[in-house]
Image 1 (cartoon, one colour):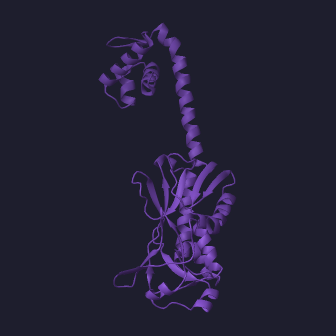
Image 2 (cartoon, one colour; image 1 turned 90 degrees about the horizontal axis):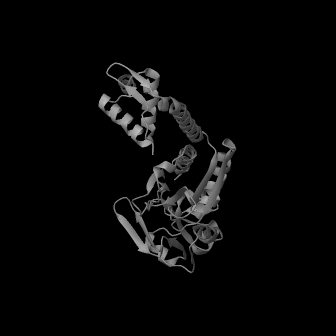
Image 3 (spheres, rainbow, N blue to C red; image 1 turned 180 degrees about the vertical axis):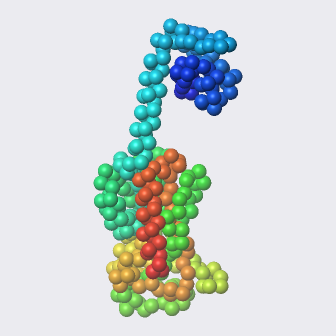
Length: 301
């Protein structure tokens, strides 16, 4: 297969009438240039340039091949420009996976606004809390809470300081009372969900001096974190949720943060992808928007 730089050297040498001048323009040594020309002539099985110590001229075969070489280089340059334009434009299809709760109740509205700003962009959104295989599933990027277990993935922080908070509805608090100490959670119905492959029933906090935690229980759990939020809104019990997932409910008074003096577990939101080549302009712009919006929500935490 002919090499791109060999073709370039041949065309430059033909235009300049000098192999050494072409080598200087392409920032290579005369020996490397001579080897490149020999390589392309060997691959084609024809002499392209007749060389002497003082002159260089195209052979008949070289003159015939020159037009094809120019067209090939021109086509490759046009292809490069096309790819560059595509990378600069915010268009095409963005395939995204996000946690169920964050996706439905926070991300959807932000994506609507993002697409209004970039109307040529098509979004395919998959929602769920299970781990997505980025090498097999039809997604470009994944938003997930927590640090990625697979070190081969590219992880970009979106909300690195996000934490979980204890919360319950005013109706539940009126009926069951508001816990004031961590141990009192054992007397309450705690709403549980799957975190990875296990039920998240060991809730940890920092009281300003040390890490504290306890194992809680309740009469229901789900593999969909949004279901847990809905149970909390309905007054079924106490939830331990990502602040990003419940910030709007707390602002609206539908949920109340309990024992705010306790610092909840870290729940950083990251954008994951399999390769850095997937970090297209739409992906980078989306990450910038998400980081900015999440930072705004974090101010109320």
